[in-house]
Length: 268
Image (cartoon, rainbow, N blue to C red; front, side, top):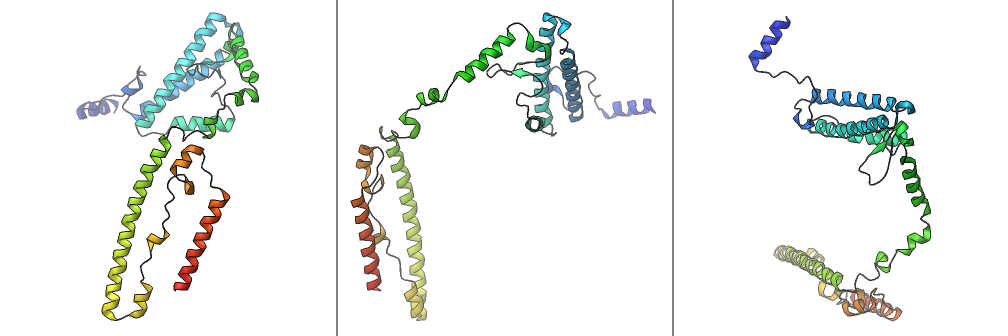
């Protein structure tokens, strides 16, 4: 039966699966094989981490084994990506979620430094000459920085106090305001056209109530030429950096608005 199965595969032109792990993950075309090679790499990483816990291996053996573990971790990363490309699960996300649940920010039992390209030290490699000093200097550098050092590098630009000095922000605001005014004008024209059509229908049918209800809204009376920077205008906004209207201006604006509302009620 085995011979018949082999002949059947050869007759159908099916290529046999790879028996050895490819050097590049992109060469694997089958999800089942990719999953198998990833499991093999995970076992090799686990075996390496177990072996490197023995401090009696010798410095050179520990360094070589630690390099081999890091190489396997990089290879596993490529296989994770290839499995996702072939339609399999996203092992990158699953591993990150597992690290968060276990409270392991380094990923695994290794120690790594930021900016070291993801290189980690496992087991006895943490006690190698130079490694302890490297982590000690890094920890001292992190703890030496105080709150005063943080505020030392904060400038007014951080709070956006000088964003309008060069006039770039004002120009961008003018462009956006012009686009918004054009869009608003188009909406108003459509509104007036719709109201006029409805009023014509109401005149034709003699519906006085509908005719009174379809009175067009006077948009022009509601517009106020404030310019950029609020009620103070663009020039004042640039001069003051952060335009804040005075109490007199605010009171005048409120008074004009109340007058307008009163005139509308009396006119109605």
